[in-house]
Amino acid sequence: MTALLPHNSPMPALEGVTLHAVLPSVEPIAKGLLASMIRLTPAAARLLRPCDLIHCAVEPFAPLAAACAAGKPLIVTGHGSYVRATQMRPFPANVAYRYALRRGMLACVSHYTERQSRLALGDDIRTVVIPNGVDVARFAGLGQPPDGDKEGLLVLSVGAVKARKGTLNLVRAVAAARAKSPLPIRCVIAGTLSESAYVAEVRAEIDRLGAGDFIALPGRVPDAELLALYAQADIFALPSLNAGWRFEGFGLSLLEASAAGLPVIGSRDCGAEDAVEDGVTGLLVPQDAGQIDAALTDAILTLAADPALRRRMGAAGRARAAHMTWDHTASKLIALYRKCLS
Image (cartoon, rainbow, N blue to C red; front, side):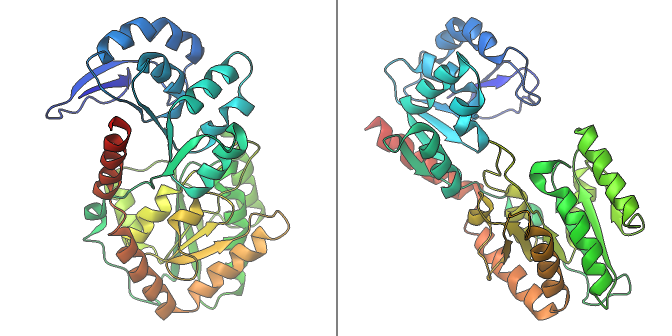
């Protein structure tokens, strides 16, 4: 097996896999990405020539993968917003992405992503849904705090502080829920703070609400600290919002929170619908601007007031996550490889 990676990726030692860190960065997205892929095509094609099938695991590289595939089977994993690249990118990139995404099989991580790809690329494209997985062993040893502890309840959110993650809405909902709850409610929003203008808006809202004592934005935290937060939390919330062409493709942190035994709150009309079983592992709230703050507040209060419901949803989430591991995802991909090669 041969794998091409961005030049800034870690290089793990994988048995039977030859790694080449030759691709431009996608985190962050490199400037002139399409031009870089065009220049790289001859070298990448040589490296991939012995391969019988090409799998593009990150959509931004789809044009390069399609150019290297020639007559070989091509699979592109559709994580989220990039399945709408034909709408979001100018000419000639939109044409390149349209050809690449229609050229092979699009393996979408959620049914919502699949629907968005069909809206952007046409109903005649070839798609399959293979959800993201979770490393359940990473969360296996986490216990939950006793109900009604002296510090009250902790709402945790994990994800970059940006509009698409609904951070402002979560801040408002936590403040409103705290004002109505007999137990004090705290919130930690752990994630990168790179979108400075939006972060400033969130901080200003926290100040306006007088919420600085109970809502924290620690930024991205080390894994050990993150696991400790999962263990301390009572509720997990990620109220994702569709922002223009951008949307939540799956909401992996929701599934990770389920693996940690937490009841989760996500949004409808995005990939979170595949990560959360509404009413079973958690609650889904509408994205509508006129409803989300009140609905999110009510969801937090519903879970805060009912320890038995939190335990039941947390247990159901753990059971569901146990059937949505990366091994399960890999088995579905292997079956797809065999189908394409046959």
